[in-house]
Structure formats: C-alpha cells, structure tokens
Length: 317
Image (cartoon, rainbow, N blue to C red; front, side, top):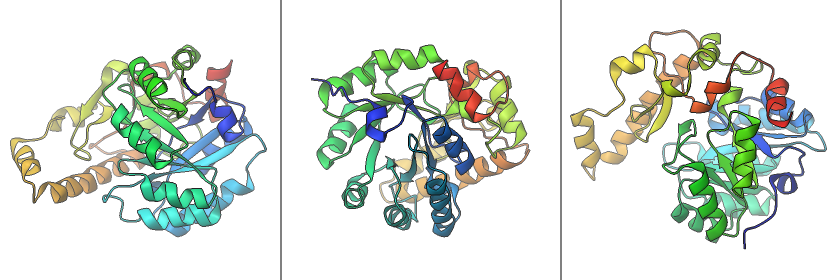
C-alpha cells in the first residue's frame, strides 16, 4: 500500500513543498524566508567555496529556524565532488534537518546521517534507483521527472510518481514542472507526499544571481528550455540563449568518441563537468556573452521578480 505520510509530517512544516536546491541560486536568505512561511528549503553544499563557509551557513540557518520550518543541504555524492566527505561531516556535526543526495550512491550519507538523526532524501529518476535507495534506508525519494530544471529524468511526473508510490514504501517528493498551485495539486493527486520547487524561485529578490539571469526567467518561456550535454556530460536543461544556440547542445564526434573509451571517459566527464560548471558560474553572477542559465520549463509562469514570500503565496493561495 502507498505510504500516506506527507512532507509536512516528515519535516514538521506547514507547507507541502520545499524550495529545491539550485546550484549558485539557493542561499540562506531564501531558506530563511521559506522557514518564516512554515516551509523548508535546501542549499547545495557546492554553493560554498569551502567547508568553513558551509559551516557558517548552517549556523546561520539554525539561528533563524522557526518551529514550523526546516532546512537541508544537498550533497553531490559522485567523484566530481572532491569535498563530498568534508561536506557530509560538517552537516552531521552541525546538525541539519535533512540531506538530499544527488548523482551517486547515498550509502555513506545514509549511514552517517542516521547516526546524527538527520533525514536523507535521495534524488532518483527511475524505479531501479528508488529501490536501491529504499534498501539502503533512505527516508524519502525525490522523484526527478522530465520537467525538472538542471539534471532531469526521462519520465513524466504522473508516470514516475505512481510507479514509485506503488512499488516502494517510501514517501515520494515530486521534483520538476511545478509553476502554479494547479501543478502542485496535480502531483499531490498522483500520490506524492510533497514537492520540490526550484525554477520559480530563481527570479526572487533574495536570489543572488545576476539581474540578467532573473530577467531571463521572466522573459523566456517553456519553449525556450533545451537539453545540453555540454555542461557536465549528463543531460541538463538550460535557457536557449544565443550563446547556447551558437555552441549547440550535442557533443562533438570527438567528445562522443572519448566518452566511449573505457579508460578515458571518467576523466573526460570530469573535465567537461569542471568547464561546464565554470561557464554556469560566470553566467550566474555577471553579464557575459557566454550565458549558460540553468532553468526548467516552469519559468513559463514567472511574470516578474518577486520576494520569496510572495512566490510561496502563489502555491498556497
């Protein structure tokens, strides 16, 4: 039988959704505003240059935590994240409400987080990942569907949610494609325990990305979102800016050949990740002709730059 527990019960919050972790976008101000509204938010550990900055951010969030709010940290758990174990150690020592794992096996995170009484939610894109996460002891699944911004899955929200709800015993948190209250109500009707909402919050007052990035989320629509392998070697959704159109979204024949080499593909993917990440960093903070702005199709509902609190109201009004 599907697990009836809701996200509100899991985290002790009032809202049925959390602000998703977004590379270079999420910050403490955004999460604090979410907690003030009785919600939750999550920040990628990679948004901080060193573990000391991450530690200070967690301490700030703890200082502003509300009785009906919660906060978490997102950790990339594959070899591309060279600071993974340091980040996990800081989360466990300082104490966070939850950790979201991405792009790798959550085994070590689950073991260490459980000792620290921290919940672990695992990003999954299909049933095989979900079953492994369940077996390892995850507390919930983040079902990343084909409408998500950034790294996305292949399945539509309904198919993915219903499969995970019916084939596992874990709460399912839907991620991707939620831009309105109607979208949120729809994924909850499929059996999701809650949702993870990201792209609508890029164009928030509290977001520290450039005004050009925020304005792009206002000006562009769902039809302007394209998939590229040029950032990390893994398909990622970005806004189809003139620069993205110029460089293309497919790998060159040389890159494809190198990725097929069993000895070189690991290092080629790492180099691609490092270069792509640098392009995204440059675009997020300043105006550049090499604009690579990560976003999902739900920006279609972003009409203006607004405070986080007002964006949240869009989903609960």
